[in-house]
Length: 533
Image (cartoon, rainbow, N blue to C red; front, side, top):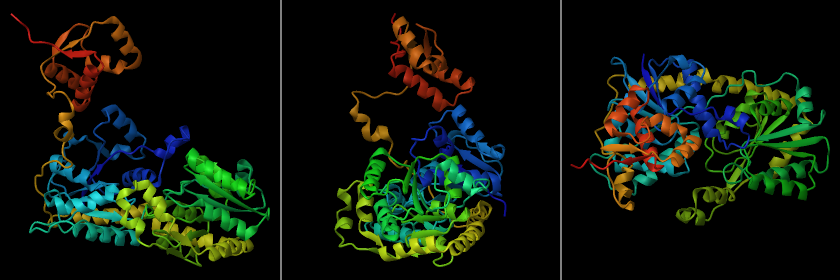
C-alpha cells in the first residue's frame, strides 16, 4: 500500500570524495549509508520521500549534497524545524544507522507518535548499538511497539536479540517496559553497473600485474583492529605457493600509515616483495581495475564489528569466486563448494577479555578479541591451491556467485524488501506507543553549563566592532561571518532584528544564530550595554 518515508541524514558520496582525496578515511558503513538513500531515490515506491539533513549543515550545503544523488528531484528536502508532511499518508522514519536514540528524539520533537522508527545496523559491537539496545528499557516513552532495526545477516539478527536480552537483565522491569526493538533481516545491496572493464589483460597492464599469474585479491580496510589480521593471509599464501612466481596476492583498501607500515615490513621479512602488492586507498577506477584483474577474492574477516561484508558481495557481483572465513555475514553470501570456500573458524576464549571489556577502548577490544579467532589454516592453504590449480572450477564458482549476487543483492530487490517492511509497519492500525519525552540524551547546556563563568541567552543588542585590524583579519579568514551577519562597523542592532533579516535573506534560523554566535566568539560582535540617561 502507499506510504511515505522520512529519511534521517544526508550522507555524502564518500567514494567520490575519496577519488579527489585518497587519504580520506572510509568504511563500509559510510558507503552503505549513501547507497541506501541513493537506491531509495531510484527504486522505492515511497511518496513522499522526505530527506532530513544533519541540522548543522547550511541550506546551501544540504542542497549541494542532495543534488549529487540520482533522482534527487523526487526528494523533499526539509530540516527538522521545517518538516511538513502533506496529507495523512502513512509514514515511517528510516535512518541508515544503528543510532536509534537520534531517531526517537527527532520523532518526539518534530514527527508524529504513530510513525514507526526503523534503523539499519552496520556494526553491533560498539556504543551506538549498546545505547539503542538499552534505551528502550530505560526510556519506554521514547519508543513505540513498531520500532525496528534492519539487520543485514542472520547472525546479526541473533546478536541483536542477545544484546537486547543481556542489557535488559540489568534494567529493573516496570509495567510500562518496552518490548525492545524488533530485528528484521534485509541484506545490503550491490551495484556493479559499468564497474568491470571487459578486458582483463588491459586491467592487469594498467596495474602492473603479471599477465599470466593467478591473482588473489583481498579488498577492504587494511586493519587488524577493525577487519582482519592480514598476517594470516600472508602466511597462508606463502605456505600454499612458496616462491612460485605464477601467483600474486594483492591487498587493497582503506589504510593508515601505521597499518600499512607494519604490513609492508612483514611482506619484506617474508621475502614476498613483488609477489604481494599493497594498494592503499584506491580510487573507484582503481577498485574496478582490481576486480577486473583478479581471479579469486579472499576475505578472512575475524572482527566483531563485521555484520555483513559488502566487499564479498561486490566481488561476487564481479564474477569472482570467494575464499572467506566462516564468519558473520559471509555465511549468508558465500556457499561453500558452490560460489567459493568458507573456512571454518574457531573462537578460543577464556572469558578474560570479555570480562574486562570495560577497561579497553572500543577499537583495542575489537583487535584483542579478533586475536582469539582463527580460521582452519590447513583448509586455507588447500583453498589457495585449489583455486590456483583449477581455472575452470574457479570460473564456474565465480559465475554462480555472480548470479547469486544478482538474485539476492541487486538494489531493486533490496529496496523492494525495505518498502515491504516500512509499508507494513506504517499502515494504519499497526501497533504504536510513544509519548512526549524529555530530550535524550540530556541537553549539553544542562549537563555542562556550569563549566562556564556565566550563562545567558542570545538576546538584547549587539554592536559590530569598528577595529580596522580585527575587521581586516576577519575578512581574510572568516569572511562568511561578516557577510552573513550584516551589521556595518560600529552599528548596533537588536538580536531579533538581525535574525529576522538573515532568515528573510534565505538562511535557516539555526544558521543565522550560529553565525551571530561565531561573530561574538571572534570579537566581531559584542553585547551592547543598555543606553543610559
